[in-house]
Amino acid sequence: MEKAEGSQGAEQTGVPHVGGGREHGNTEEYDAEMRQVDALNRLAGPATGGAGRPPDDLRHRGADLLVTGHALARVASLGEALTLISGLTDPSLPLCSQAVFRADRETLHCVGQLGLRDDGRDAYRMPLGTVHPAAQVARTGRPVFLGSPQEFRDRFPEGHSLSTHAGHESWAFLPLTTYGQLTGVWMAAFDAPVTITDGLGVFLMTVARLLGQSIEQTYDGQADRALSQTLRNSLGGVGSGVDGLSVAARYVPTGGGLMVGGDWFDSIALPGGRLGLVIGDVQGHDLQAAGLMSRLRTAIHAYAAEGHGPDAVLVRASHFLASLGEDRFATCIYLEADPATGTLRIARAGHPHPVLRLPDGTCVLKHVRGGLPLGLDLDEDDYPVSVVTLRENEIMMLCTDGLIESGGHDMYTGWLRVRDALEPGSAGDLGGLADRLMNAVVAPMEAVKGEQPAAAFTEDDIALLLLRRDPSAVPVDGTGRNLRFTLEQDQAQGLADARIEFQGLLHDWARPEQVDTVLLLVSELLGNVLVHTEQAAALRADIHGSHGRRRLRVEVSDRSDEVPHRRAPGELSSSGRGLVLLDLLAHRWNIRPEPEGKTVWFELDEDGPEEP
Image (cartoon, rainbow, N blue to C red; front, side, top):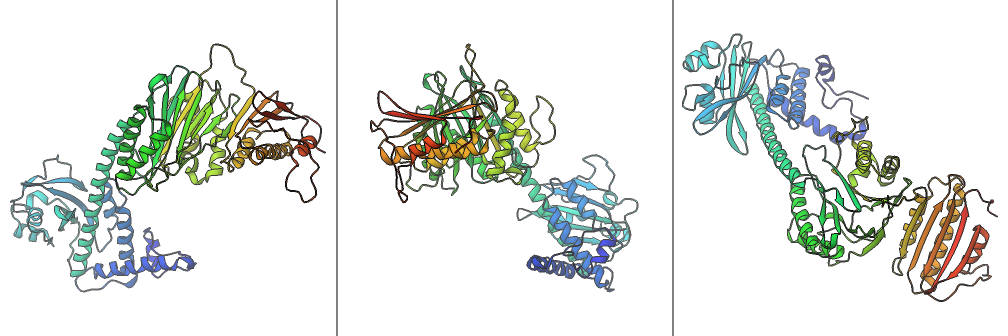
C-alpha cells in the first residue's frame, strides 16, 4: 500500500500519520481526512517570522492537530487533555507548561495545570480585575500573546510575578468557550522565544477551541455518570424470592461510560403469595434510555401491584411509553409465578425467549408467544399469555439481548455460549450459576469466588434473572428430562418452535440420526392434531436412563374423540402417512383413549435397533 506524502516525517517522530496506509477501497474517508489535514496546515501557517516551513513539516503539524483533536473528544479528565496537547510540542512550538483558569463572577482560579509548580490550590487565584493577562482575556475574550519576559513585565507589571517561572520565555493566553460562553482561559508557556505570526496564532486558537470542547464533553460525562449512578442505585437488586421460589439477578452496564443504561429487572410481591418478575430493555444506550427505563420500570411495577394479569400489564405499559412521545420502544417479559404449583404465566413484548434449565443441567430455549415491543402504538395490543410449569430444581432464565450478542456473537452462537456456561453445576447454587454465566460473557478470565464479574467493555447493557423452583423435603430424581408444550389451533408456527426445543432436549443424544427421526415424528403428530381436529395439542416428552441407554417417550394428546386410522396413501397423496411413519421408525407406539379425547405416544431407545 502506498503512503501519503509526508508520512515518512511523521514516522520519524513517532507521531501517528493520518491518512497513511489506507486501502484504496476507503478513498472517501481518506480524502475527507486529508482535506482536514490541509485545512489545519493552512491554520498552522509559518512557524517563525515570515519563514515558511517545509511542506512535509506543514503536513506533519496538520496531521498532529487532527490526531490530537480526535483524541481530545474521548478524554475523561482535564489532565488527560493537557497531556495530549503537550504532544504537539516540536522545535517550532516549544510548549513546556500549561494552565487552565476557570472564571466565576468575581475571581479567576486555576483548575488544572501541567509543568508548573504545585503551590496549592489558591496559588493562582486572582480577582477578575487584576492586571494579569489571564484576567484580561477573561474580561475581553481576546487572546494575549507575550513574546518575552521583558514584554510581560512591561505590559503586566503586577501579574508578572504570578505567572513567570524559571525557563519560561514566551506565553499565550487564550479564551476557552464551553456551552457557547466564555468560561475560562488556557495559558501556554514556552521555554524558547516564539514569534506569534498570524498562522501560529490561529493554530493556537484552534487548540484552545478543541480544549474547550473537550472540557465541555468532560463536564457532560461527569454529569451523566453522576445521574447514571443515581439511577443504578434506584435499580437496586431483587429479593431472594418467596417460599418455594428462589431468584438471583445480575446487571452489567454498557462499556460506553454510563453506570446504567436501558436494561432493567424487577421483582414484585403480588396478592396471594405470588411473585412477579419483569426484565426489559429500552432502545438505546444513552442517558435518555436510562431515564425512560426508570419511568417504565416504575409504571410496570405499579400496574402489576394493582393485580393486573401479565397481558394487561404489558398493554398498559405500551400505552404509557407511547404517551411519553420519546419515539423509543422497549422489549420486555413479565411473568407471574405461583410458588405452590410452579405455574408461570408469561407475556412477552418483542423480547428474547427465556431459557429453561432442566434438573440435570440441560438447557432448552423455551418459546413463548409474544407481541410487539412496548411503545410502538400500532393498535395491536395483543400480548398472549403462555403457561409453563416449573418442576422442582428447574430454572427459568430471563435475560436481555446483551447477554447473548455481546463479544461479536449472533443469536445462535451467543445462545450456544450461554448454554455451555449454564449447564454445569448444581441447581442449588443459584448465585454461582448467575456469576459463572456473567463471567463467561463479560469476564472470560477467572473471577474471584464471591465477587461480581468485572465490568469489561460491553457493546450493550446486560441484565439477567434466574428463577428456580425449590425442591421439597421429598427427594426428586434429577437424572431425567422432560418437556411440556401446548400448541393451539392458531399457532401453526409453533411447530418450528417445538422442533427447536426438541433439538435442545436431545443435544447430547448418542445417535444423532435418531434426533431427526424424533423431529419428524413430533411434526407428524402435532400436524395431525392441527389438520384433523379443532383442538389444541398437548405434548409431553420424558427421558429416563443413563447416557447411551436412555429412553425417550413422547405423548401428544387432544380432546377430539376421532381416533386416527392407519391408511395406505397413494404415491401423490399429501397426508395419511403419520401412523405409517410411527410403525416404521418408532421402537414402540400406540393410541390410548382418554376420558376426554385421546393420546398418541411413541418411544425410542438410545441403544435400540437401527432404523429400517
